[in-house]
Image (cartoon, rainbow, N blue to C red):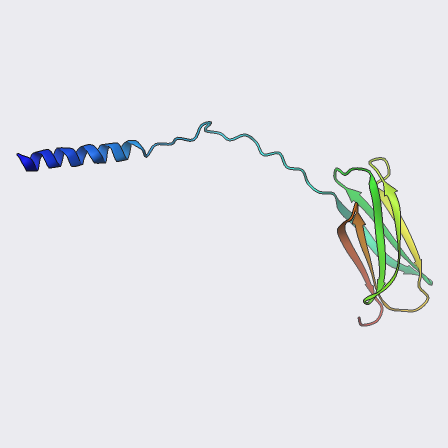
Amino acid sequence: MLRRVLTVSFAGLLTLGLAGCRYAFVPAVPRPVEVTLTPRVTGASLIRSGSTLTVKARVDGRFEPAYLKVQWFDGSRALGEDSVYLDAAQPTATFTLEAPDQGAYRAVLSLGGVVLRQVELYEVQP
């Protein structure tokens, strides 16, 4: 008799444990996640024309109007910087730098203080 009571009690505990193994997430389909992509620089190029280096860049994506800044480097030596104000109506920029000597040139592009892209032109080994 005691064995039967223990078996029934054990079966009852198992039934309670299995009752908790149901899908309990409500709602069954979660809300869509809204993603805000950061702006990106596309079509950036650094080319030499005579003694002038030229960077052309386009900012794609949603962004608040801000300054696109370029910092010029020859190897690790900073050469200068410039900036252009961009907004949705004007998303492209062109920067130039006089550089008569060959070098390992880099142009770092940042928008609103966030570095977005680096373009390079290696005419000599860095």
